Image (tube, rainbow, N blue to C red; front, side, top):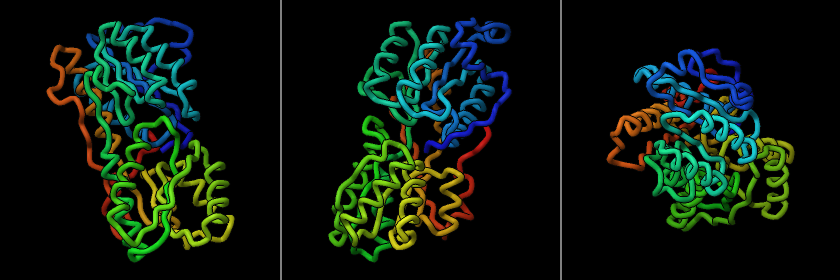
Length: 324
């Protein structure tokens, strides 16, 4: 879920990172707004987060609050995200919504926001200590991993060697997806689960790993890719060694490049999340908490959706956006 290339968006609810980095205070409409919600995604240039931005903006308009949406472009890492987090917290918003790139590395930022007496909500991924959060919302990552195992079992006729290509070690969603896959694959006695490796969220690295993987396991028949960047690399790697189509690949997310690969038959399925709904809910919960009405339920899980070539024409509403 991490493809670069966000187009410039001139919405009044978005301020430039340059202004924040320079320490320029909020002015004009921002000062007049009764409530300001700062929302820092892990990678603002990715279609998943562009879709989340769309949902967040729609909810902010509905509530009449000022939304500050800022995040790194092109690099998914704590070192790239932290300057944006620090910049928006320096502006002392009313509430803070965060998509952490790492559960531990972003924990101090959450603690800082709490010390500033503002509600903190996480969306998609979360932090190590979720007990301190006002609320969190995410997709059903465990359920999505299970769906991947179900589809591979069906595609392989109930027998074959399967593998997981994971993303980054510190990403909570990736951990849960693998957990769901590993739990479900145990229920299929004909599937032989060989293990996993990390792609470091880099397509070139994923391509190299899958090439080496097929040398080690020449009878490998199925791969579950934990995110979109990993999937694109795996597809390229299989293409390079002439195994594309022979090894069945299912991937998380519904990025444009993944939808194209599904149509072409390079993927057998996608586990799509609902980032628009996540963005809407995160803003709503942050606003309610800021108004003194914290949500009764702190953890919200939104169902993921299995998309295959057979049903994709009826599931286009789950394809990720390229503009907010």
